Length: 262
Image (cartoon, rainbow, N blue to C red):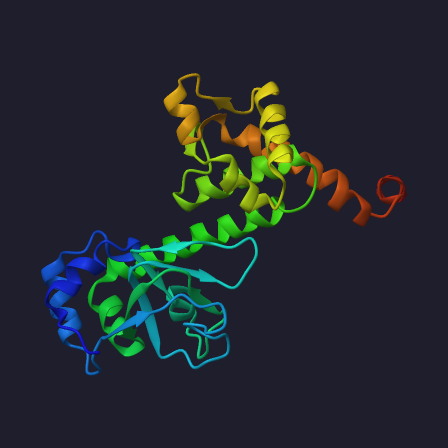
């Protein structure tokens, strides 16, 4: 069903890419679009995709209520307010890259690509914020890739950094993350006992601190004294198990020989 733009602009400013935009300005921009905005009520379904990979990319979808998940593992929970399709939009894609399904009763608003083009052309900070959001997601995907292989402690460390990357806080000192063991298990694809062992190792190495107060432990609050040290801990295993086997065994000898010959 078609929706009234008045009021929807206010809801859209809750989304990361539009959070700094004046609702009245956004409302005027949305009115400039030719095609209407469509509201869809989606039932949770495993068999029926809200968005199918390979379909024509004609609309972005704003999750106004409910939750949508992409078909990937480890899965991500895209809870309202969330804009789906910003990476396809920014890359000029003609078709959807991934598939998505609603896992709760969900309300989404389909925004025509042409209307979104008007928005980013008329409000430059929207395009800049979309770029920033996408870069943070790329950083998160990188660290999630490291959280699914290797030993428990480096995998837990990578999962923590992936969560920091979402807010652009994957650097510096004294960072805090609210992440329960269940969520870490989902990101690392490990059992609860393996996650607990990984957390224990990181705490023993003083790479993280677990809150002493019950309220902090219940909320899963984890303190990271130095993000660079935590990254280096992850990279230590990557270098030994992934990079080192790719290097020729006598590479250092060959370099020394070439240096002497010159």
